[in-house]
View 1 (cartoon, rainbow, N blue to C red):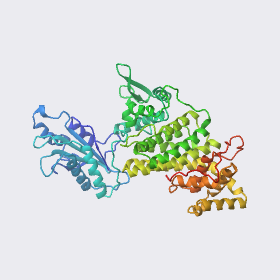
View 2 (tube, rainbow, N blue to C red; view 1 turned 180 degrees about the vertical axis):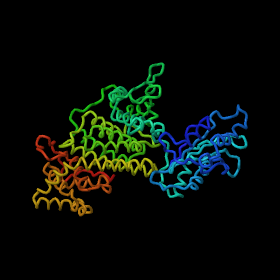
View 3 (tube, rainbow, N blue to C red; view 1 turned 90 degrees about the horizontal axis):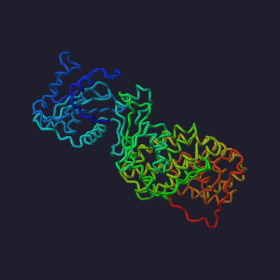
View 4 (cartoon, rainbow, N blue to C red; view 1 turned 90 degrees about the vertical axis):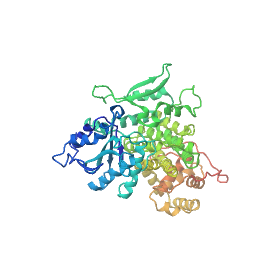
Length: 562
């Protein structure tokens, strides 16, 4: 249930006309009253003798009874209450009870004192009502509407439970502003899938990903085709910015500009600057760019995500919040540079995670440096080809990012950030789908390599698995991905590493409970840790890095479970 308090107005009759008319798209069906302040108000929708003017005069009467100088300039209060699409259709009596409880919660009416404001609730669709009230009480005093929005939200959560409706998570004021109904209708008229506000938010978010200076940020906005206005102080210092889509115009034909803060709380210029001001090695030196290609950038992304999982799981709250925010930048950068077969799911993952990237825990910038550099590397390395090593390292990066986003789910849940935890879960589901698309080809090649291993070698890898991971061995051996892991263990050993040590470390260092396939996850972790090629379908003799040997007798300290 979504209650939304609209802007206050000056004309009661104007709002009544809107509520009782068919609507711009003939969406208002059978408009009628379901409740009012005295339960005896004329209903122009069902009573042929009643008129809108009669209802307006009754609603405005307390306002007209006080001195003109004391009347509120905007005396019309308007609340809409809408149910989710999957909710059952409520009866008029149920909607009437909802209306009475909403006006009582907001402070519009107080049945016990019998001195509230006059109001009426109109239903013109199955899934919502509108409540119109005038802001002078019967005794001539004005109502106390401080925190009315928060109070009606609290009442909505209670009603959801009592009426067995979809339960929404309580907001915390960190969400991006939703498009207005006017913006949605405008987008529909223009044939847009999303509103201008939503398109601008995504474009600006991607321009921020990995940027390291104002000049670079504004260059990216310009390259994306946005119109930009900069707001400067008399001294010339830049204070803020607004952006617009070239084809989004108002009735006067002028572009409709949105300030960054109106797109999302963390897209204001001061908040963006926080990302640039912390953790830079040398503010006077030019930003580092990469020239070694998409595959190397994706490997660095996987390594940065691997490290960030521990920060989110075990670090201080400020450091964890910074890592989670930076994870959003990495998702945006990966989606921007991904191949066709993964791009849609990665974009959906980035869009969903946008809500999870902010909370009231202030991010301690500097702890996010590795992830932000990974986002920058992805942008500057260019797009992946969608197959071969690029596609394989994309799958490796997505797999690691999935566990980072899952760590964010747990962190938000622990801090009772319900909306953020839900958004992160949605992002993780999109990442699963993107991973399946990206990993299909390289895993098929690894699978075939594993099946071609000699029986004695596979038996030796199986024994190694049982020795290193006795609790997981049966599950892994039953998975389709076991052959890919067996091939990886063979490659690890051939490269001069101790496969048992790396395997145990890969399993112990990060949780595996949420892994769709433990064997596939371990294969990617081993290939990343050992520096092995992610794709083995072609000749790797020229691309295999020098082995990083690990002594069997001195495996080094193990990292704690994260």
